[in-house]
Length: 306
Image (spheres, rainbow, N blue to C red):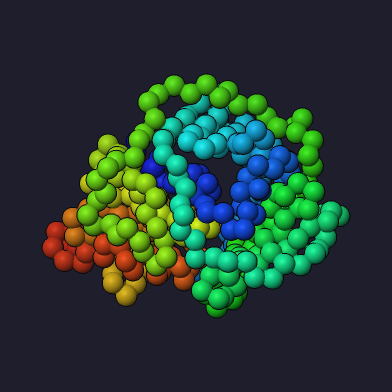
């Protein structure tokens, strides 16, 4: 598995690395529905948004963009399958991808209406501050809108359904037959990584061809951390910023609902991908290996990125 494939996997599977916040997340994962979803985020590098179709059916999530290169992604616990132009790419992992860690509790709960349906608006608190606002469909328990907040209370991301139906006849079919040996958690965690960082608990670590991939969760947000001897590249066409942090330089790319940060530490390449708001990302990264600015790799960085 290449580092960038591992990053995509971390993003996809991160959605299942959640604890039970008063049952709302667990019940929503069991709901069955279909609709068009908008993700809109206000990031430090500008606005990011996307629209696609989304369905939950038989314990799996299926996402697709109608008429756009026939790509369908199916995500279920332990696996994801991407079908594009008739070609199948699959990934399998073993492990619970669940954590008992949760720094969240429920604040206010209000009765509202969403898409013409009865719903509940539920506020989640982290250390006493509002960080997440969920809109839960009353009839199905599906989470139809999720607004996440930055540390100053401003909106970070708004994920919301633009339409909603329990008629699943329009969900594209995906062959669930997957060949291959599942990746299994390793027993020895990289010594450079903490068991807990800024409220995020280390869930599982998986071996890559040239490194490891570790999953962290705080009970709602999640991140994957890659340590590898290979350089980490970003997909073509994405905007990448050079960021000067308190501990050194990073490369950063925001996509709708996710952020990727990469850097060279003293002995390896590091990348983080997750759905963390900017302030939580900064706090989390501050407890990981620091960027290296000295020696050979520092000179290479200066030569390539100035």
